[in-house]
Image 1 (cartoon, rainbow, N blue to C red):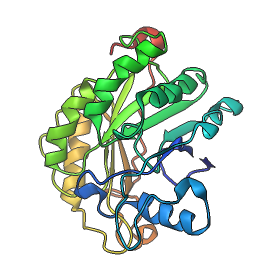
Image 2: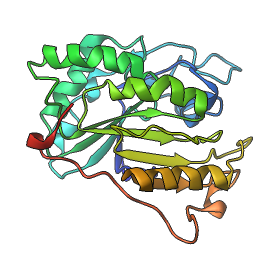
Image 3: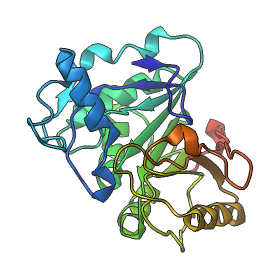
Length: 263
């Protein structure tokens, strides 16, 4: 786990799962691959064997880490956790029972917020009613402190993923449009509460056009959806910064009370 995360829209990361598989072109310069390779070279067993030598993508090996499940339980101070910043909780290689174990911890930590992001919202929608059933909870009254999101890098991803996310029982649903690789002109934001936008960063980063960002921001404003601009990205993201039209955009969704949640 990492407290004081460098990710602008969260406070800490919590990784009960490591390893993944490429899904789409949004994965091509995945920061988690670079970081996993570095941590494996440092001898951290949690990250070894997940990338084949000389390859640029995860190899599909998935590791579950029950030994880290208790971490949020041990922290009393309210904290916002990005769940599985180094993997995807809804990868098909993650067992349904283990997903339920992760959600059991989140249910036991109402003082925290948990942000769960996937590129596999179809499995998320399929598994979550079963997870709620395993925990003895009602999926029509989802956990208010668990935000469920999907990555949307271009129009193809939007077509495939946003409707599936709408089928997920959640108090807060969000889109992470990072890396934004194309125009998203006609976003259907019904049932979506938060949109994050960011450009790709690091060597070989693909460019993001300002017009794409402004178009998404304007759609969010018209729909009453919180808009968060994370970064312009590029080879040096510190130099390009986070300002859009002269200011930062750090809007966050309002977490509803339990009585207000309609799945």
